[in-house]
Image 1 (tube, rainbow, N blue to C red):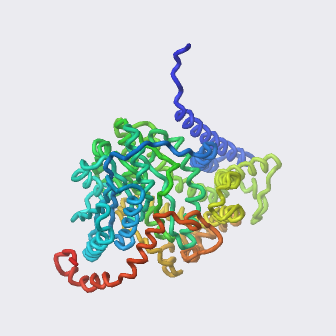
Image 2: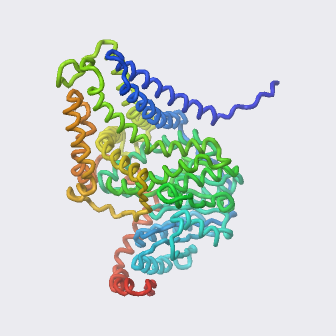
Image 3: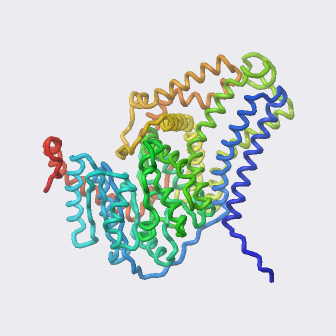
Length: 602
């Protein structure tokens, strides 16, 4: 027998995805140049074709993940053995959060863990970085309420740092340095995360069964959305994300992702591998690493640990922003954090795939520049080329193509929109064939919701692109976005509030329309799908922030909530009836602001 080395299947999958995405990008590049050949290829045409090349590669890369997820089929649950012989701590970092909402989740998870096992080996640690004295007082108050709620059950600890150095990553690092030796594994959550006890036990068992496993990531499902914006995001996460996650898991293999929450780590591996120094220099490119999760995954892989995404793990949930403005605020921090990774590409010893993941993260934001550049170049193109070509009649909005050119143009248009829309339509078809649509209210409701999600996302896309462009401009100009407090209340926005946040989007849309009308009147109608949502952005943002309970965008957790979600709802209802606690905070707020900010004791 020959002694040929076995080819790594993950390497083959990665090569196929990169080659396929590159081929699609090159095809778009060639098609676009062919599209402009009849009037001669100028510098502006070549520039637009290059922009199209990069943007198409990014679209094709996303589509390849969906196709991989579809051909992967159904993920079988991995077999694990028991009993659990390891100690696990559930870490809940918080920063200026509502303690009633957060601690009621912890109460539900503690009870869920107790129902899944006898509770031995599981602790909860609330790690507060809150700086506001009144919020800190409320945390202490409701922590005591949480202890009374779970008296004699699981062990729940609370500590608050006086200074939030290193932000969330520093908060977790501080706990691991001080208390990590007491535990084998740590489940890291966000303040809005909640997980089934059975899921947490299963995660710990998988870590226990595989000594080389350093981090295991679950796929969080968005729940409790009320607004139209939130429900669209929630439906997309529940319906499309599992397929994309399966494809991502196939691509990443042992060098998988870490999204910073709803994951379990091996404490020893994390302590040995994931110390994060500050990047030299001033923010935004220096200072604490904001998108620390990607870096921690890369450091674990560099040390030889497996980092894996298990898409078959259910019972993992989170909540999302309820309006586009809150989403943009969070996205601003992610943008700065991902662009910081440009400083880390040359870190010694990192696996090549980890460096490629850094590039992907950077490109996920920089691609907005390419699309914007393409639009601007398209507006300027007629002023830099011949008056003839595809618009020989002044102000005529429909281009005049030859038969061959029309075929090329149609192919290019179909290809670009196909990369955007086809993956989701294929996922919908697959869900119908596999009867996964039952959990979404049936086939008709799932199909209509998919089409509606595509339409709403298309309307929101130009507005989101403008926020990303502003974020990139702020980072490149040296502005530090910091780590803003997240608004989880989901308050509805009025048109005036929305305009205050989107005025620059409106101004850019109007300017684009005027310039297009003056310089390239023939493409005004073609750019309306981009400029119209920008001009109407205050109304769109306000409209999408309204509550939208109804037939569309139904998810399985709405039809049949998971047990831990029902436990949390019951706990929260009970706590909200106990209104005698918060008036104490109100009475103490002025004193707390004038004193040494000591917490109120009850």
